[in-house]
Image 1: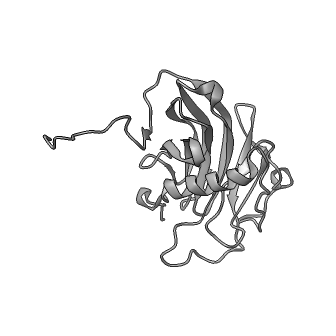
Image 2 (image 1 turned 180 degrees about the horizontal axis):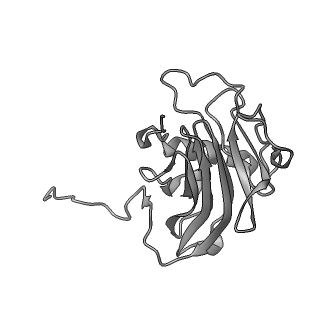
Image 3 (image 1 turned 45 degrees about the vertical axis):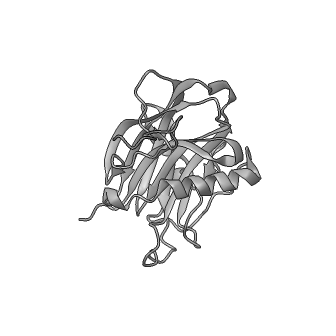
Length: 222
């Protein structure tokens, strides 16, 4: 039985750039969801469809690899959940290409959250030995320049897991224009997400800023 190793988790920087580029053309607009033949035949209750307010993560693959929807078959403590499911109508990833990925995300203005520490959290369940998932959040400024990010690299959700809570935390600086968060999935299987929240928190940041606020070690003393 194989599992998606943590080092296979794709470069988040590239994912962020793809999402940011798409947002330049369609901020606040719903991106059509990719539909495909399911890995297993879905029940009537788990038919793929629109998830209001959420966009589909851009895929590296030229074919339709993931499908999405609201589940009436699976729930978390009586709360609704969304599913992200791999499809079977796509050939294996090409050699040398990053693992095919899917997921859902939102983008919104950062104005009311500046100078605050914000956490995006959700309950997540996964099914499949070759699936891996992670919450992510990143902040962009002028010209969609990425300021800070966290994609749970090295602590991603790998293989079959029962419901558990996960969280990513970032500081939102003055120069922030937009905040993006969601869940990213790679590999074959199915992932459910429920009870998502976005709140001010005192928890330590789980990510890091991409750029320091001032120059360092100008005298080469260390």
